[in-house]
Length: 258
Ligand code: 18C
Image 1 (cartoon, rainbow, N blue to C red):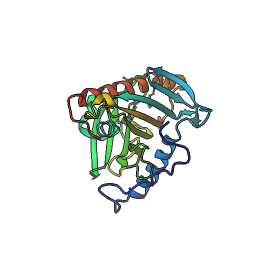
Image 2 (image 1 turned 180 degrees about the vertical axis):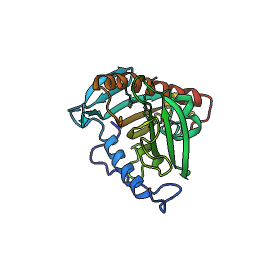
Image 3 (image 1 turned 30 degrees about the horizontal axis):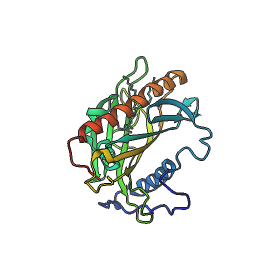
Image 4 (image 1 turned 90 degrees about the vertical axis):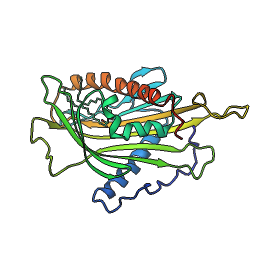
């Protein structure tokens, strides 16, 4: 664990391109702080309450079984360590709309409803339908942020992307063929560098990225718990493996983006 106990956590700095006059800004600030704190907690000391449901190499996925009004809203926490990529690269490909169709396999259509600033966008996405359930859509803001480490020399810098559901007057929920889902997602990344002992330049062999991915999705309308949990079990590992392989592939011949 690279975050030492007793270390003062860096205060979340203001975004690179402040958009503090936007009506969503107070919510974005609050949710980002909260999600970063939640992701940094990991599984807690004993991991109590978290149930391992998928494992593959360095990747581990945990869930807590939770229902609201009979609907499965299981919180998910996944941890993964991926060699050869940085947290900045992972977050860049996760946030940027131009790559989304490349890696998001459940996506049918993505629209950027608004670019709030260089680090914050508003998305409308429709996802593939699972017969016989209704098709789902979602509107969420997405925010990318660098949390530099100013306090602890050996501590990691952090890059994060937080996605959180919101509303849009031109696209009211459940007004067409889709049922609106609600989500909060946080991708938090810490880069580890072990510089070569002989003083030669750092290459991709010397870096790895610890990823913590947290997600809570409310399906918006009733669906059988067993079907939803089976869907999570299949789709989340598929997503994280495919997405990280995509980032490795995209960056392998590029300069390292720290
Ligand atoms: O975080 C991820 N992606 C981001 C960028 O897109 C963002 C968006 C997440 C939307 C996730 C919602 C997906 C709904 C999928 C519907 C089902 C499609 C299945 C198609 C099978 C061919 O944060 C990565 C997200 C990884 C997604 C994992 C799957 C989560 C399942 C959520 C289920 C929602 C209810 C669906 C109701 C179906 C009823 C049987």
